[in-house]
Image (cartoon, rainbow, N blue to C red; front, side):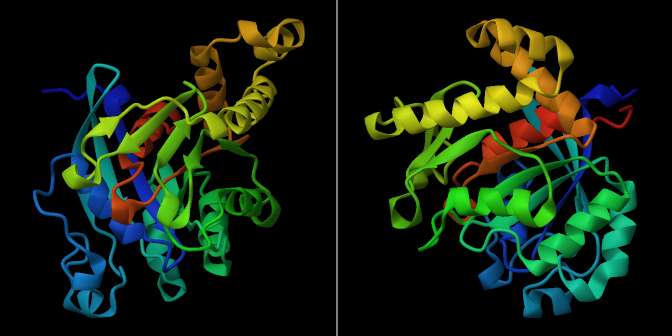
Length: 287
C-alpha cells in the first residue's frame, strides 16, 4: 500500500526544559488515539520517556518516534512524532533529531516566553532549515501573559510571529481561545479531558481586541504573498481565510514567518487546534 506523502508530517516537538513539551506530546498521543490513558510527567508515566533515568529525572534524553493518525479537512493524516530532548546537555541528540524533522512545534512557557534554552533549540532548527509552528503553553499558569510571550519570539528570536489565536482569559481564568483566522471562539470541556470542543460566541469584552489581532494577522499575511499584497491595498475585506492560510503556509515553509498558537496542555486546552495547525502549516516530506 503506497502512502500519499502529502498526508504525512514528520515533526518534532522542541522546547525549553520546563515548557511542558512532554505533556504536549502526551496530549497529542491521547487525542490521536495512541494513548488510552493520559500519562503525567509528574507521575513518571509519560509514554515517550521509556528510559528509567528519564522517568526519574522527568526529562527526555533519547529521541523516540511514534506514529499518530489525525483527521483534518476530511482526510486522515499520518503524523510521525519525533521526540527531541529539550535539555542543553543533549545537544547532539537534538541535532540528530533536527536532521530528520520536516517541521517542528516549538513550545514556550506562557509566563516565561522565550528562555535561554529555547534560543539554543531555535538556532539549531534554523541551522537545519526546519519550518516551525509555535505553541505558547501553560496559559493557565499564574502570571501567564500571551502578549509578552508572543513579543519575546519577535525580540529574542528575531522571528516573524503571526498570532493565529489569542487566549480567552489567562491563569485560573483561562477559558479557551479565539481563532483569529475563523474569528470563532473555542472552549474545551475539562470533564471530557478537553476532547469535547465547544464553539461559544467570542466574549463581548474580547471582540474589539480579537479584531485588532485579526487585522494584524491579515496585514502581515498579505506581506507574504504579492497577489495578496495587491488585494490588501485595494480592499482588505476581500481577502478570504483560505488565501490567508495559503500565504501563511507559503511563508512558514520559506522561513518568512511562524504561526503562533496558545493553550494549556495540562488542562487539555488547544491541542486539537495545534494538530490542525501542524497539518495546515508544516511541510509534507515532498516539500
